[in-house]
Length: 329
Image (cartoon, rainbow, N blue to C red):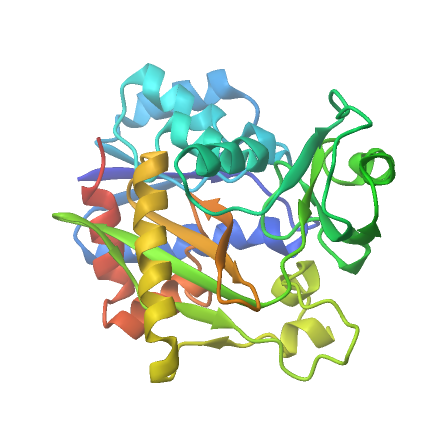
């Protein structure tokens, strides 16, 4: 089968999170070749007409979509799948609408709520219509995030704010928006354990891979326990080396893990996902899970969480790429 891998074009001066897509493309290409497919890698820019021409000339039977952003903007993540829809090509991963809905974190939270799935209280997006001044919010710690950017871009300890009313929170959102992709929101901060559950499409429905917990080891009292940008991408940072991923749990966690797996399957269904995905959770001090994010195209680098979950499940990377390639509409 002729397969073209598309990914966002990057340069050597880009941030580590952007450059990682090249690592993913090479790993996926190797796996596809091991499966006997003919593979080309095609970086994408905002020249969508050029992309369409390049695809027509190559006449792929499948497109493996690894595009996470265009021109550095996560909010453009859905443009390439939309072009593929218009051209009539079969492609891997989430379709255009689910990818858009899950990548816009406020729309995603609204959808989670409508489907009865637990997600923390939120305010935003900002800029936008500010809530009425009489709006009541939970006084305490909130976390300010980018609406569109992923990979913890813009997320650091400065995003945690203690507020008492909506006016104070909205003022902080307005101040942070320029640094967070010009669109941000605030979410009630959940202090507690953090879990990642990866899902892989297989015949008969998605398989939930072994749950992983991100453990905040050696964090001093008062330090925010969040997986921020440094924890993911800065190998010289304290956060990078003190947030290991664990797959071993005691029998006391059996009920919680089963609940997380059910919620991950329900989130997959609510968003109409395909191919692969990851659902991130926080679990509060009362054992209540809260869905943080739906990642419709999680990182496929061999050293990332999805590959680690595959390894834990006894599924080879090449085998998983075969499942993803097969699960196209």
